[in-house]
Amino acid sequence: MRSLYFVILRRKDHLTFIIAVVLSTIILFSGTTSEIQNLRIKVNRFFSFTRFPIIWMESKRALEGQNSELRERNIQLKLLLESMRHLEEENQQIRALLDFQRESHFTLVPATIHGKGITTTLSSFTIDVGYQDGIDINDPVVISEGVVGKTVLVGEHSSIVQLISDPDFRLSVRVVPYGAVGILSWSGNNKCDVREVPKSARINIGDLVYTSSYSDIYPPKLPVGKVTAIYDERGSFQKRLTVETFYNIGTLQYVFVIIENNVK
Amino acid sequence: MLNRKKYLISAVVVIILQLVIADLLTVRLVRPDFILIYILYISVWEGRLWGIIVGFVLGLFMDFVGVATYFGLSSLSYSIFAYLAGYLHGRYSKWPPIGFHLYGAGVIVIHFLFQLLITSQHILTSNPQVFWARVFFTAVYSLSFVIITNLFLPLGTED
Image 1 (cartoon, rainbow over the protein chains, first blue to last red):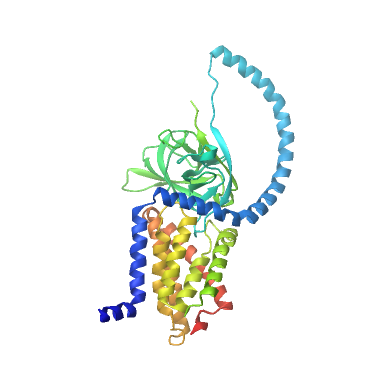
Image 2 (cartoon, rainbow over the protein chains, first blue to last red):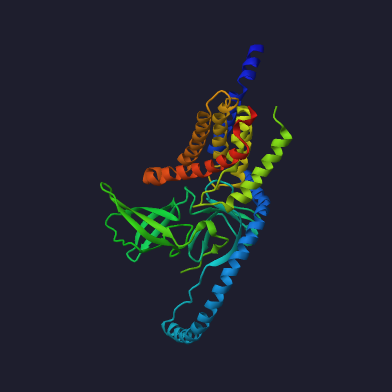
């Protein structure tokens, strides 16, 4: 017994290492329970205050740029508005004639990014809306330029979003105009890979990529990016595409969560 | 014996650095890993035991605050990293400096390789060039901060 004690004492660093590895492996393979998920939401919410100065600085810088851009666009839009008023009247008359139902849109909840995690690669962030705002797990997160990710953990007033840049993220997409379908995954530097695309599919560089109608999470026709490269691999029945997103994921500050999809 | 107060304060500072500053230093979605640097110093200065304990705890913390997937991976990889880095404890005066530093750099590369092998397997199979470039860039980016820190606070000073 005494000798065993001395062995443990002499080899305590090896023993600690084995315990740490075993514990980590158990945590890694057991997945996360709801208690751990709730705790993670709370921890994330607590640490979001550390990003406040950065959010404030980034917002100030972004607002200055946006302000001048918006003034220019305001004039352009005013000119457009006049012509659109005329078009709207014409549109309503035609709709009435064809008896079309008015198309419903998504119900969007605006959110501010409060935390971007602390891992070496950006794969998730925390937003300031939770189930009190109508958010649920697996709600799509988007911006006007395209799909950003989906909610994976939802707290009372904050949620964790799994980003398109997470190595585990997959998205069913459709390449237009010819309609080839594939599975999209992140490959780094604002670029994604699209796999499972049939070799016979007609695709050109510059074709636009949208969400397909096969996903239970994402509504169809949400923009994702554009095709920048096509690889016709020898000996394979499929093509591989490189798709570039329309935005830089590292500079995002505000996003929208789709809580209801009423598109017909 | 570990100066608990000193290390606790420095751990808080490192966590704040990782939470606030690392995001500002993001290049191509890659951030420097200040927590890794901290664990390296603890392991080299205080030995394997404290390195593994600190690595495991901070890894768990990182998993809580950070990633959406692979919960537990950071604690595993930091524990392995601390175990390997802890081998350098008390060896600065015994080893040639180049060997000491090359071993440290190698352990950092192994850490990122291990993490990316688990999180980005699909990139390795589909596009090995991108995968290895990512391993290289992530490791070199954090390594450059180790070099900067080492200029002000040499790893071998505790020997």
